[in-house]
Image 1 (tube, rainbow, N blue to C red):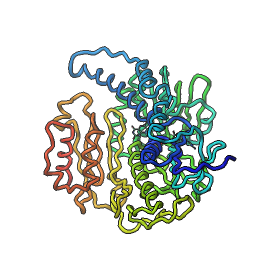
Image 2 (spheres, protein in one colour):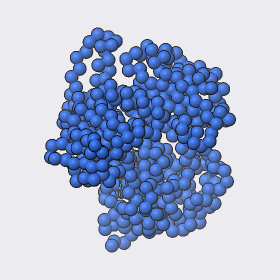
Image 3 (cartoon, protein in one colour):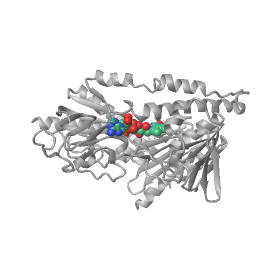
Image 4 (spheres, rainbow, N blue to C red):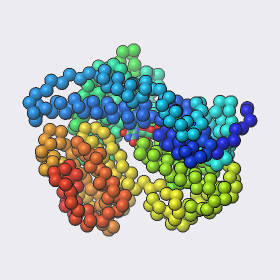
Length: 494
Ligand SMILES: Cc1cc2nc3c(=O)[nH]c(=O)nc-3n(C[C@H](O)[C@H](O)[C@H](O)COP(=O)(O)OP(=O)(O)OC[C@H]3O[C@@H](n4cnc5c(N)ncnc54)[C@H](O)[C@@H]3O)c2cc1C
């Protein structure tokens, strides 16, 4: 094994979170090595958010054109997948080439290494036959990969994950989607709108099972209206593939299609990362972190791997905290002032004691006693980009009741709001508010509708800043917007 190369920070995995951390630390003047085994940028730009939202944009254009009949005459709609596949290839992914992203990182002063990295004791990272020794810290941002359920026969079949679904050039005639969560529903609706016969099979008793039941109902109805067959409460027991078609067997029922897309959740792969060499229990599903993203002594984590929410906005939010905390750690290690409000760290080299878990005193939401922000997920927003969009923030009614909170609920259907009524075709949706009656603030909200994800933003501010209900009731909502349904729902809060 080669002599260790001494650098300031090693970032393992340059997905959304890792790339952001590595780039900003390099810009701050640290020697940063970023290691990526696949494509710099990670899942979001190549197989996730961006190409899937391009697909959704195209599918929604078809759906809007089909609504012309109800509003503005007639439209002859003939779907063609070719421009969508071309756009994903040429505009989103450069045919799955990350040269631009690598240059973006090295342009900030970072050093890039292509390869699979693993930790090998405090401060040490091994990539092939190279050994890196980090003076100040290691940041792990290795994300998640599809979690494939242990269904008999499935592993031996050529099933699709999100990668094949995003890369598809020619659509199949029929598609089985195993999993009725956000990704499953988004892709199911897209393919159905392009003429694929789509069947969704979901083990829970409703689709979008983590969201409000009213949201599940609307999403299911919308997909059924697009011709998607949906089977909930179905536990797949066996999968077979005869060379032409897949069959999913569940009790006496079976479901068949030309392709099978498995979207049953995501999973971190801690066991591959050598994290046991820094004292982490690798049998966990995710890598637990404290509110400054510390995972172990001298190790920070960012993004999906932390299990705090598999969203790009979570990875970016956490990245800012990692950057601030690591720079503070470097400052203190170099003998500078303590900005974090934590006990000072003596010495710079890895293996020296650090402030893991040592958050002193009050660390209120988003604040803490010093300049380093603390993670706070109370107002975590999430959007399922089906049509209608399902936006949600904070707690659902059920989660709030399970916590023993004195809950008030307000509900306003979108079609009976002025804008919903005007919108007519495609106006399904609602705003649902969950309030803590004792505190007089919103602790959760769901906004479903043509612009459900956009309407959500005001609700996120309300939950995040704990805006008193009395203030929300006495503000001015522009007429006739979809977000005026928030005012209706506030009125409905009993
Ligand atoms: C179909 C789909 C749609 C999505 N849509 C949205 C959306 O609309 N909005 C949203 O907020 N989120 C969305 N997401 C989720 C979003 O893509 C992820 O939350 C985000 O990519 C997480 O970023 P990350 O940095 O944690 O990990 P990733 O983006 O997964 O990056 C991790 C990187 O680490 C690399 N890596 C792993 N192990 C090693 C190793 N040992 N050595 C070196 N490199 C390694 C991987 O190759 C990868 O590039 C979607 C996801 C999917 C699959």
